[in-house]
Every structure is written in structure tokens, then in C-alpha cells.
Amino acid sequence: MSVRPLIAGNWKMNGLAGESAGQIKALISKANEVASLGCDILICPPATLVGQLAEQAKGTSVAIGGQDCHAHEKGAHTGDISAAMLKDAGASYCLAGHSERRTDHGESNADVKAKAEAAIGAELIAIVCVGETLEQRESGKTLEVVSDQVKNSLPDGATATNTVIAYEPVWAIGTGKTPTTEDVAEVHAHMRKELSTLMSDAGSVRLLYGGSVKGSNAAELMAVEHVNGALVGGASLKAEDFWPIVETGL
Ligand code: PEP
Image (cartoon, rainbow, N blue to C red; front, side):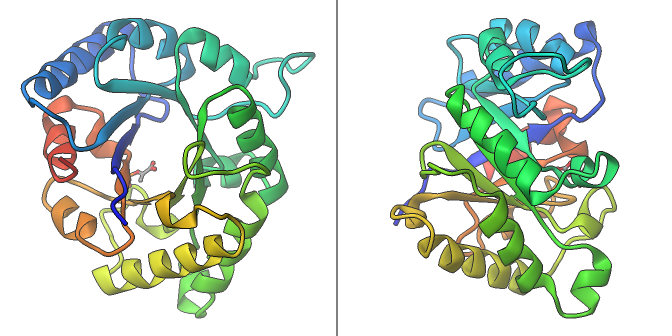
């Protein structure tokens, strides 16, 4: 089954208005040079820039997303942002359960599931992130951990249209290390199988790989069976670094 790839950038806590506008402008102009794009392109900037960049990218093939949302639509949650607010600012996607959120903010699978449900409830596409730590990999628990996260973080009502899964081994994020293509293939095939017990359209769900993706390794990672795109951190900050990764999805 052919699944349209998604190449997504996660800017994390990086980006001020001026420089970010320049990067989005450069990305849009690269995308405009392609007659017919074969993949979807997404940038998830810090929340402060979602409105500005969504306005700038309106009507183009670059989508803008949030990096996190609160599980509730509104209320007394100082410092938090709801999925409805991201949608209102022009976002069309939202990450849920990035490992930095799971680690730094103690987010459990139940929290991630609630956030992903809030995202799809606000008509955003939820990108649910899963992945094992180095210790879990070295003790042979990768598939067990990933299964547990997929099963317990998947939002109720998930479909291939409203939900994307990103496999990001924690030890590969921001480290320059990547799993072998065989290891990626094993986890992605496993996730596809797991999803087929949970969703009727599991074959069409986009499964992204994330963790030290860059221009030089993107093509081989994207060629792995059941890899339908990438979630990119460091190499998404500059359009000139991100574009070669996007090209592997075209
Ligand atoms: C990420 O933050 O999701 C990520 C994969 O980061 P990096 O590409 O920098 O490893």
C-alpha cells in the first residue's frame, strides 16, 4: 500500500521571529520549485511562533504544528496551551509524547493518549512519539517497550488520517547515533503489526522514523519498509539542511 510520506521538523526550544521567518521563507521557496510534491512537509516551531509561521505558510505546501498541547480545551493551567489554541493559531498537527516531554515532564502513556485525543478532538493530526531508551534496547526490551507505548498512547478514535506514529529511539535523538536499517525495519514492521490489532486502517498509518536524521542518512532510512517519513530535530532548523531530507520523500 502506498502511504504519502510526511517529513516533519521539530524545532524544540529554538527560534526567534526574524530568523525563523527567513527559514520558513526559504523552505517554502524550495517547495514551490517542485511541480508536484510527493510528500507532506511540516515544521513544529516553538508555540510562540505557531501563529506567525502559520500565517506565513498559509496556502503553501508547508504545514505548521505544535510540539505539545494540554489534554484540556481550556481552564486553569498556567503556562499551558490547548490543542484548540494551536488550531486557532493555524496549526494542523501536534506532537504528543516526544521523549523530551516524557522525560522532562514525566508524561506517561496515559498523558500522551489524552493529549493526542485532545489534538484530534481539535481537528489537528496527532503525531504520537514512541521509542526505547538505550538501557531498554541493550536489555532486549525494545519491541516490548514500543508495543506498550503504541497500545497505551494511541488515542481513542485514531485513524490513519488523524494519527501518525513516530518511532524515535531515545538514545538516537540529538546524539548523531542511528539504529541500523535492520533495527528500524524490525521496529516499524512490529508497530504496523501491533496497529493492525488496534485499527482497521493500520496499513495506511504513517510511521515516521526520528533520531539523528540528516541529509546524509535520510535516503537509506526512508527506503526501509514501513518507514513513511521522518521526524527531524537538529537538521530541521535550517532550510538548507532540512530540504535534502524532504527530497528523499518526494
Ligand atoms: C527529535 O527531536 O524528534 C529528533 C529526532 O531530534 P534529532 O533529529 O536532533 O535527533
